[in-house]
Amino acid sequence: MADRRLHVFFTVARLLSFTKAAETLHMTQPAVTFQVRQLEEHFNTRLFDRTHNRISLTEAGQKVYEYAERIFQLYNELENSVRELTGDISGVLILGASTTIAEYMLPALLGDFKAKYPDVNLRLKVSNTDGIVSMVEHNVIDLGVVEAPVTNKNLAVDVCRTDRLVAIVPPNHALAEHDTVPLSSIVEYPYICREEGSGTREVVLEYLREAGFDPSQLNIIMELGSLEALKGAVESGIGISIVSRATLVKEIKLGTLKVLELEPPMERPFSFVHQKHKFRQRAMEELLDFARKYCETHQNIE
Image 1 (spheres, rainbow, N blue to C red):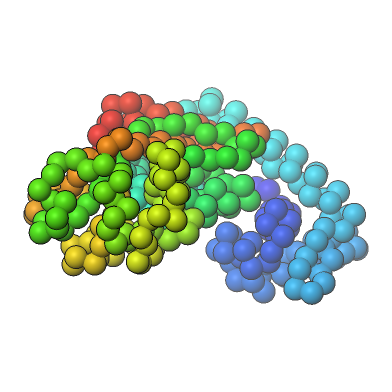
Image 2 (tube, helix red, strand yellow):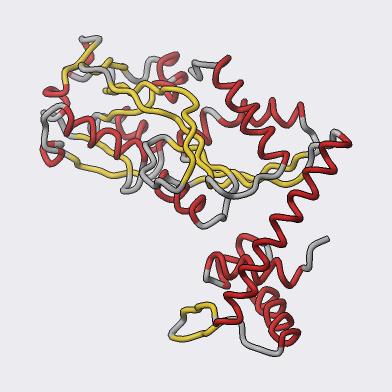
């Protein structure tokens, strides 16, 4: 219903990248460039300055962007108003989640939501916490679900549930005879951690600081971007680690890892994050409300 050229231009202007806009819109980059050029021909002026592989809005481009934002907000209000009258809940929602949440929490939640609202199409992007927050900031996704505190004050953050983190060691490890382990013991052994930008990594480092330890005391011998790879490395005896207890159902059942409660305990929030001032379509409101209620009734994801 909205002008396709304007929509493509607006996406490029938000991201200041033809490449990222093409990925977001599921178009080829030449197709995105063509749509923008058509709009420039319509207004008979350049909307972007292109220098040194970077783009920026011209004065005319900034004016078009401001009006486009208002147009799309009014369009969303129109969609919502009509759907409130008809009771129709449909549309496309783009979600983003950090790895732990995407693999262990969201499948059941989104499955139940899709069963209730079959006309809502859901798309999921997976990244680490920093990546998800960045996507929310740049409007690449409608809603993010992350596993670490969010510091950007311009974003709305709703805590979904509390997640407990535990230490894991192979069954034949020296610490395996215990059920709890003090933090002082963790720093004595080779440690396998998640990659830079991971929510789990940031929470563990902050936990060390609050307990009076310098994070540099952690004997990091390996950094891995995959939780499954990390658990496999611990099973192989390469080192120990700290992960969400919710991700260890299989390993506990098979006895391939020993789970140790931390002393003092370590917890973190799983949170929804979205733009504060972005007008939300009806499907987004329904998903947020559904997710909040789901979290209240499903406190444990183990």
